[in-house]
Amino acid sequence: MSTSWPSKNPPQGDAEQKRSVGKGVFRKCDGCGETLESSQLTRNFEVCPLCQHHHRLGAAGWQALLLDGGALRETWDDELAAGDPLRFSDGRPYQDRLTSARRGAGARDAFLSGQGTIQGEEAALGLFLFSFMGGSMGSVVGEKVARLFERATERHLPVVLLHASGGARMQEGIFSLMQMAKGVAARERHRAAGLPFLSVLLHPTTGGVAASFALLGDVHIAEPKALIGFAGPRVIETTIRQKLPAGFQRAEFLLEHGMIDQITSRLDMAPQLAVLLRHLKKPRP
Image (cartoon, rainbow, N blue to C red; front, side):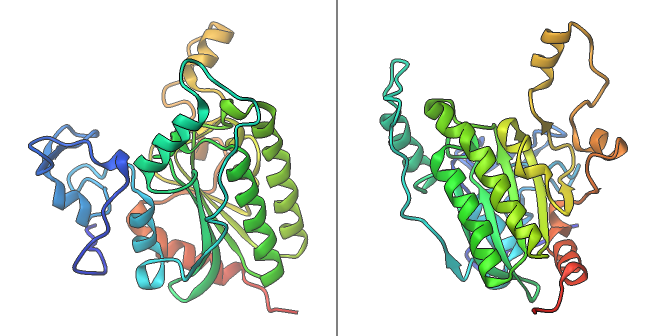
């Protein structure tokens, strides 16, 4: 399936989308190894038209793909910025890392949230930005996730949350781990209000994000071959000194073992989410 951007000037991807050959004219597919024109992948939302391998898609691309009008109608809490409570430094101060990450990702932290419509269905949308320190969850990300659920509860909106994260951000220590409980508590209040939560698991969804709200959705949808789990396969194999089954922690393995509900191509994600939102929607009291 091939899809075009909804405008003549497709949004440029985040820093992670720029790996290329021939000064950006050609790129090699990570799935089949074929060399493709960069514009061909861009038009197809970073899905290889030959093997359907899903390369990472940036925030602008996800908005163009999912949302009516190609962008969030309003964004929330963009002014929040991380501090340095631990004065963390491993040879490079944490604030220097944050400055570099902001420059590369074009965002103040690793999470974007706001309100928009998906094929006519109103929703609160959250999106992890993997280009910002691997989508790691620090205090700002956790606060924005909690506020996303809280605003959705107040406005009687479903939540669609796209996860792509390496887990809790080590530079903020216990402050990062606290966000797991905060996000889960906000999700529970949203659930108690009878509102749906669609959790979209992208590659990778791991660590403290996977161990908290990411796997507490009403429906869990994964992209093909997405890595989903707490610790990575190499860590597990080293710990238990056993060889893991083929494809362990990949979306297909989790679907077979009942951990997720479905695997959906990125190109089919918008209509699939819209169908689920209509099905799960309840009349406003």
